[in-house]
Image 1: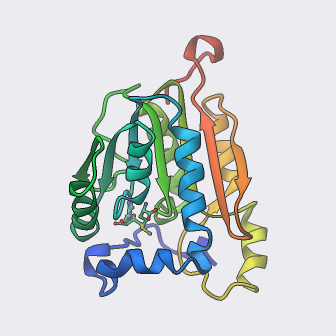
Image 2: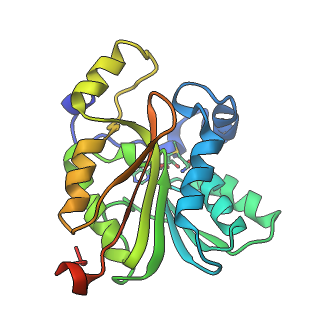
Image 3: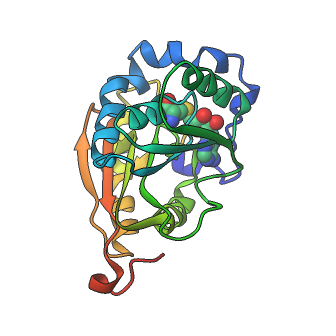
Length: 225
Ligand SMILES: C[S@@+](CC[C@H](N)C(=O)[O-])C[C@H]1O[C@@H](n2cnc3c(N)ncnc32)[C@H](O)[C@@H]1O
């Protein structure tokens, strides 16, 4: 089970033989990446509702979500810890118009070097499952911290209703790996600690889009994490 793993596990995309072929894997549209384009489109549509919105994409990888958000008029900052993933992202952006910048960042879900209330949206696809389950609530608070009140946190990733649903799925889907797939019940509880409500859209048997709006601190008595 994913929950048996240590918190120290690190996914170093700069060390993998397939990193430069990542986009081929997602375009195969199978297993973990079934309906990949639809998942990214859904996240971008939920998060990027106004022209010029300031959007932070965490674990931006080869830039596919960042570019979608920019195409919807957002000003995007994409963070990732892999030089090789960001090099691919940078090459795509150079060939397109759009307001996107990619920045190399260590451990970006847990340590964001931005002021409180800096972004209209924080987005991430297929990256949050690299954060240990017990650290995911802390990462949610950090992402909410940099969101302005009324801003949206939107995630697309492999997810299950709860740990029992993940366990059952492991009997059906042999590609499920030793990653910290998201649990809707735990993330519902995490966003509730700041007075937000988690919205859900299941895209495949194993992939969900999850989002929450940061409450207005004056109405909820504590919109800051
Ligand atoms: C599967 S790729 C997803 C890339 C992109 N968001 C997408 O939807 O195609 C996961 C990305 O997360 C990054 N990553 C790995 N561990 C991370 C961590 N602990 N925090 C943030 N990003 C991480 C990797 O470098 C990689 O670029």
